[in-house]
Image (cartoon, rainbow, N blue to C red):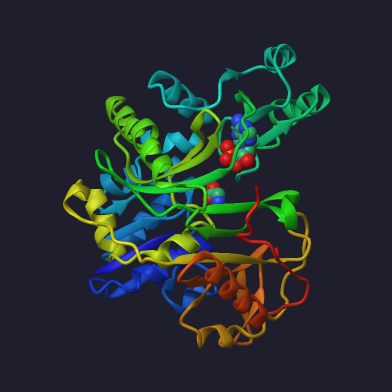
Length: 421
Ligand code: AMP
Ligand code: GLY
């Protein structure tokens, strides 16, 4: 089979590497991919959001199956277009990807079907949003309705912050049209866990749990980033909590979407907070997480393509998804300055040392090739994953991998996976 993966970050590199293990696949393409991915797949110079060009490519190259890694093409309707053209593709259609594309939609769905989440109201104008905030308890959370590269959430500790945040989103349109509506919601407290799941529209199979570290610096200090590291399993996600999530959140979400005529085939990513009142949904995503995928997929025993096909065919109840009895931790090596401005083009040293270790996986997020060697080419440059028999060992191995690699102005957190109360 010929498979096309859409996207070009660390997440897509992890998907490509896992698919490479499938005996059913002869060739993997990745659009647009990146320099590191080009060692494992044939990269195609088409943007992930260029849906029509991707469909043309899939047709002319006789691609048997396409996997979408990124959120934007899903929300834009890549799956609908491929299906219209008779092409097989893994991911939710536009009317289901909206659980990520519109926070107002997903909050309304949760309210209607009694799925536990923070209390909220939706607003389309600044004045009424601000009046509501003035009447409610601080801190309070303001979220842009649409996609905002994970940056459209503002936790407001004062009225001044709330006013400034609302202004940025609704008036200055910092996130474009994503901010023409906002969700204002109750501030919840508790540890967070990410549970991704495979879904075929009716059956949902959760993957192993993961936790990520979003802040730039150790001790959860500094600015929010796309993710500085992650580990799996989560220490807080016990079997009891998993059972509650299955009954109160996962199954109700799938059946709610089905009842609304928005059958969801693909990955539902549940961003959960374990509050004193039980687990609540902080957000839904309609795709694999980045960098969660870089610790989840190395733990998968089953053939990933078979699982994807079962989701598309509606036969997830007929297969078993098997996991390895191990743990994984991923440390992101970022460019100094990230998530603000940073320089690019620094040579990366020592990657060949990682190649020699079968317990270390290197996922490329932002690299380029120059004179046959890799150079830095983005904020998040590499994800170094260590796999071990338990979390402590996995974390130790990930940092051994980090010690093998270097580039100028390299920045990473030293506390990935560290227990915090
Ligand atoms: P989101 O993009 O919705 O995942 O939000 C980003 C981060 O903001 C989450 O991972 C939480 O840490 C935080 N957050 C979002 N909503 C809330 C909330 N209602 N209460 C407390 N923290 C929140
Ligand atoms: N790691 C968070 C996300 O992928 O949205």
